[in-house]
View 1 (cartoon, rainbow, N blue to C red):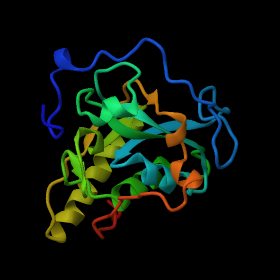
View 2: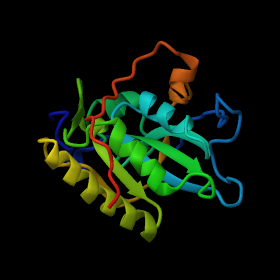
View 3: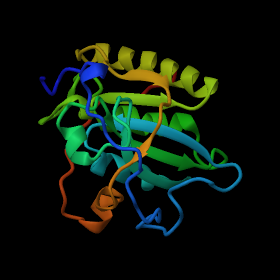
Length: 208
């Protein structure tokens, strides 16, 4: 099966019953990257290419309590990184963002999302090819759906004015999020010279 085409659910890899074991501790700030989170913390999920660089963009934002990387939007339970990269699980590489909405708004996170990657590329991001690199926003409330769709329209307008293509970003209610392996968590803090393939379009998200 081509890695730029979603697999047939019936043909997806079987996965496993048990979750991958991780410490659950954020390498940068030491907080838990797993629930329960402190009162008032909200969750958001974004896929924008390789999750190494994407996660770093979010943990650098003031008001973000914790981040984690993992897999979502596919068919295989508790997949491994190698399985996701095969193209036979249907999962995207996704960043979980736990944030304090009294400090940073969901719109602020959406601005980061839209501006730091190219959401027009389908099943790829730059030289990274495959279904796991597709652009996705997985929402946790009706308000998040509303804001994701509104900023989608606003950013599409900016892209059109800049002579760029149509957005391919998927917006959907958050499915099960499977945490990635320990070595992937906060990867670029552990490996400062590691790979980051993020490249935006140069278009800014303008007010609606």
